[in-house]
Picture 1 (cartoon, rainbow, N blue to C red):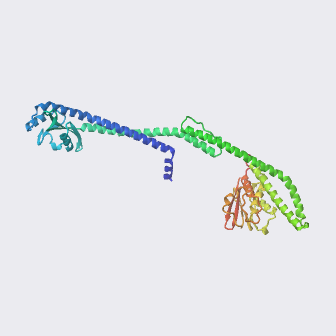
Picture 2: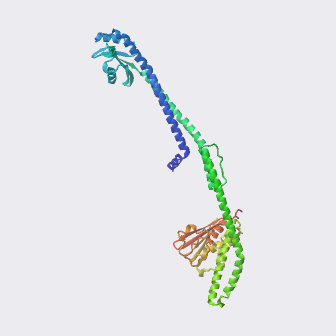
Picture 3: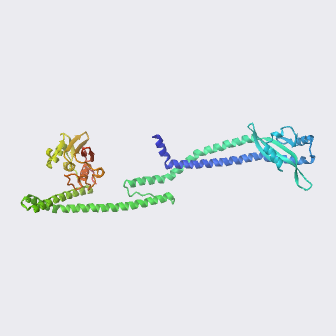
Length: 476
């Protein structure tokens, strides 16, 4: 879990900005320190090797008129002695002869000897002997021929100088360079945090505004500052929010108009339907006296009128929920008595396959009319035997209605409470409009409870949960 949180934190914009800024600063500081180190090292070494090479060349040039070629051992020794005022040691080499005995020609790096033998200028090479830095300088002794060209005399002069002091200075310089780089890291992190805060502030504001927009606050807007990419993003967000607010407002207005139309039509249909029901009741009573075909037609008209009446009643009830005019008339009721009353009012009994387990003494604050609607919808479409089971704890009343039919199709179950959804096409007793379960859920929620639907191995089950002490809903 900690590893996941760390990865999640590292994936955030702030640590990525800080790491990127710190890395760039660190690389820049290291490059600057390295360049300074190389430049200072070159300057320090040049301050030693350039004067030494110049001094050696000058002394050789001064002594050159006294040199007789080919030189013997005595001349080489005198030549070497005249070069002793150099800071290091010096030898003069001519073939197998060596003037000056401070070091042998074999101590000179072979690469330097080959360069001197082949060249006409002063050469140098830095080496380390037993962890001690040294500078070797070598130059050929040249003479001018009768034609004016310079020729190698075969005489070579070598000198070496300790570089211990310079090496110590270079090491100190390197340490200070790395210390400077290390010191730049916390400064870079501090600057990165400051920069990330400045950059992420509008991003956080945009995130907060987007969250509010997602929660339905469509009038949220942000102040666009500057003319950078973030300001352009804020402008785009404001335009999107404005367009969304306009579109949603239009849709809500259209939805309100549609609901108002349905409510008005349903209300207007109630009066003629009442008259039609009165007529169909008379036709039902006199159906036995009518010719057979006329009796069938009369009963069909009567049945369809009742279905139309129920649909209009459901639409009127739905329109009340949509408009916020649904009211609760709360009172304390024995829930078992209320449920038994709903069953009895519909003429259902044990002979119709109703198995009731309704323990008395469970008192709750509820609206019995709306509880009757919920119970009626749960029982109306059940395949017998239908089991009704009432239970309660200290805060909740639970009413389970279980039938033994084919159950609710799996593809319909997630939408069974949606309006005009019919899950009972295979049920013989189904005459619903597709609004009953939706109204049942609205009634349950109006009480502060809810209703759930599911399947058992033998059929469908509806579970109604209501609080024992319902509070009147807040007016909308």
